[in-house]
Length: 271
Image (cartoon, rainbow, N blue to C red; front, side, top):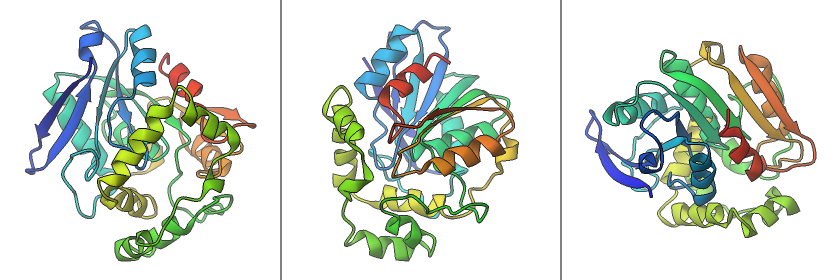
């Protein structure tokens, strides 16, 4: 059972939070989960079952404009750390690990960089790298129009969203098979997030294509980077770049996978 609540933040905003504490022991390891783009922030059944089997407490929240959380105009990736600090403070959690998939990866890293005394470890699954000229950031993306528009600012990204459609070529057959199986809840949650509006996704993309508000060198906790070699949304060069620029990193590279395999998300909860 997951406890959902509306948390009132110090700046007047609210976050919709999710906590699996009822399924965990009081002294359980806590992992703060950062959802992908777009998703609602809800804790999905496969993650919950994997966490419960390991005695792990999962906590998450919808980022601004997702899942009932208030907007935060002009937010950057770093802003996630301040929100998470207030979430864990409200729950009485002193130290925790953080884990993010896809668009959640950068936000998990932000928590580690800006809350170094509280974050014990990070998992970044198919997460995008900071916008850089250090490599061809867009190369290998099946559909890069949204991020290219985001690099020109929010107004350009919002205009692009008016006619944007999902490119089926962004996923490989294995991705579709996963979404039709145990991880059908992931696809359904993404649809719910999109139906509620596109502001969260637009703001995510603009934040990814702008300075993040922290340097990767500030991440002192160990980081596990998981990357599929056939990922057409976040190409493998991003995972490689992250692993090479983080102080303490391990790369799980899956050459035949597209988006990081759901089984890897479950297995990573053991770390």
